[in-house]
Structure formats: structure tokens, C-alpha cells
Length: 569
Image 1: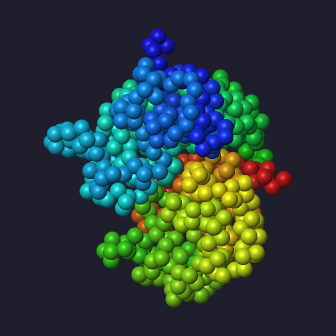
Image 2 (image 1 turned 30 degrees about the vertical axis):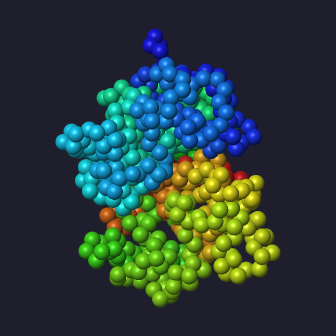
């Protein structure tokens, strides 16, 4: 490109003062004005640290030693300050709770303008315009802390967009969003990019979801090094993703299962650009060979809801006439849009709230009169935000807390905690402070602290949010193991990959009602359910259509069964 780079790393190395080794090693990278760049890498790869270097959190908030140079708009960042950088680089954080400053959505969006003494009339006009762009215009008077995860994310996005910065940095923008809202977020980011020609950087685990829209380049980081800097087509047809523990798009995996050699000439970076001229026949042959069999659970009922309705204020129903029956040893997903009532459902099951009408049954017995403590003996809940569950400074003490409250002998506690830390991949951090952990690692601590209590039913709210593919797989395979031991697992999730791969059954909520209770492959290929519940059609279904396979649902189910077969070998 002829014009100078807007961002230039030149032999840039950064080491936190608290770490023995650098987190970023000899980074050389140029990003040009108006580019849209995706940065991917496993947890701990250094991608978030790279983001912190760009927005000034490094070195102004997180101290460390810098070697080499990082220039933004030709200026050395270490010579600027965090305020000056914030006028050039706007950041939307993964944990949107950490970004709120206003008492209402409108105040929060307007915050940067208030700081700049923008006249009130002009401020209102700009806030209304930006709120409309992110679909938050009807919630301007709501408190940010009353919002769902997706609504919080959109409020954060509006708050950054209002201050007309040149570079927009998105740190895991999809982490807390339902599938359709995530898809919309990627479309909004793409729309902003096309209209404003701003330079956009997206740091995200969910590669396939970001590739719903075009990007100029994908930068792959691992162990603090840039491993690859490629366009999407080159990247997904190479071994880079698999070699570095990053999930490749599902349709690419399906092509490989069918024996197709994926090349960049097939334009496989996006499902919308993929050419199946040469691979359609191979997919059809594979589809015909794969056997599908719906697994049937004949165990007795362990948890049921009968005509359950609930409202927080006695006026607006949050859940209406919910009926389901989960059998012992099942693994079930509960899915639906932000605000559909999924988390409320878990609160009713755990006894944090009481149903207005209907019954909740454990092994056929009404548990209405069981206290929260009594329910905790049988139902363990792992919440979405780990910071809301953690109450001890050290990892061991946090995981041991429930056992100590139950007065379990200390030697038994040590043994049980060690065992659960090992299976959650946390054994090396046993004596660490929780403050030193990443968001994803904190998540695993909260799962460990519930699992150590040996519950009969485990409810996990977004268990894999913020996890890279390796840790996601570790946690899910671990949950499969405890599920095989007889623990019934209920997953409240936005992750359609998780639902497809791990839960044969999905309960779908929309507007507080149950709209489906069926196989995951059926849910993600039913246009009406997808629309009503804010889900997203799986790319496997689109691949089947591209290959001229009429039975899209059976193709998706075939993929799931084939993959399960590979794992169980």
C-alpha cells in the first residue's frame, strides 16, 4: 500500500513486570488505514496483550518493559498518554460490565461527549443516532445493569462509536451474545467499516462467526509470536488453525471428513464464497455412507417442570407455561435469545426465585418447599460471569469453600480439590491468587468449585464463554465424562457449536415460552425456530444446500454422529 501504516509494530517486545518471560516477542506488523483485521489465537497467546498495547492500557495501566517500537498515526505510543490514545483508538471490552459509567444507557453512550462539553441538543441527536445503529434506541432510559449480556455489549459499542475515533478495537465482541445478535454485531461492525472507512481490529475466538463478513487479513498469534498473516481463504485452507488450537469453520471440517482437499482456490474463507463445484459429489457420497441414529435415554425422570410460570413484578411474565422432563444422565442445551428467560429458568430450579404457578419435580417429588441450601445438595449452578461467584482470593480456598461450609475433614478436602483441579486443567495454578487468572481460567475455577460438591444435576450458564477451542474442548469433554458417571448436565448456551456437538437434545425458549424441544440438528435447520429464538442456521446446513443435498437436517445429524464416532474411538 502506498499510504503510511496507521499502526506499526517494529521489533516490538513486551514483558509484564510480574512475568518471567515476555508475553509478546519481536512483533513486526503494519496495519493500514481503513483495513479490517481479525486477530485470533488460543488463550494466553498474547492477543489481548497486543490489544492493550494499542489502546494504551500497556504501558500506562499494566506496567512492564518494552523493547522496539509501536507507532500509531506515526507517533510512538510510549510518548503519548492513555487519554490521547483514547481519542484515536476506541475499545469495546469483552467484559462489558467493566465499561459502564452512566446510570442509564443514554448517559453511558453520551459519556465521552459530556467530557468534551458537547452541547446538550447535539449530544441527544448523536446519542439517538448511534443507539439506533446498535438497536438500543428503545432502552435509553434503562439501567445498564438491568440489561442482558447482548444489550450490554451493544451499549458498550455505542459508547465507543460516539467518540469519532480513527481505530476501533473489539476485544471478544461475541463473548456474551446470542447467535443472531452475534451475527448482527458482526454485520454492524462491517456496516460501520464500509460507511466510515475506519480501521477496525477484532480480537475473537469465534473465527467462523467473524468470517460471516469479509476481513482483509487474519493475524494468528501464539506464544507471543505472529504465526501467520493471511487472508481468510489462505488461512482456512492451511494447517495453521488446527496446529495452533483454533477451531476451523464447521463446513471446512465437514469437507475434510468427506475426503476433500480444501484449497484457497475454493474460496473457503466464508461459506458465502465457497465453491463446491469439485467437492459436491464427495460430500454427497460421504453423506450417504454416514449412519445417523438418535440416541434414546430410557432412564427415569430426574428433573421436570409442569406448567411453570413466573414474573418478577407480577405484571410482565418472564416464563409462561413451561413444560419439560429431563431424564437421569441426559445432557441438554437450553437455548434462545438474550432475555428469553433462560437464566430465570435456572434461578427457579435452584430456588433463588419461586415459581408463581406450576411445579418443579426432582425424581417425581415437588421441591417447592426445599431451601436453597437443600437444593444445592442436588443441583449445582455455575453462573455465566465468574466474578459473581468468586469470594476467596486464592484458587484452592475458593474451590474448597463449599466443602468447608459442609464441615468436610481437611484431608478429604485436599484430596477432592486436587482431583477436581486436575480435571479442570487448573492443577498448575493450585496455589495462585485468582486475580492472576484470565477470564477463561476464572470460569474453570467456578466450575471446579461446584463439581467438588458432587451434585446430581449440573446447570452451567455459558460454560465455554471466553474459552479458546482447546479449553472449550477440555471443559466439554470433562463434562461428558461426568455426564457418563451419571450426572445430568443442563447447558444454558449461545454456542451453537456446543449444542450441536455435545447435546443430543435442545430446549428452545423465546419470549418466555418453550417453542421447541427436539434434536439439536433439527433446531439449527428449522427456519421458523431460528427466527423466533434469535439463533443462527449452522453453516453445515448451508454446505448441504451448496452441495445439492436435499436432506439438510440429516446431513447435520450425520456430521455430529460421525464426529462423535471419531471421539469415541
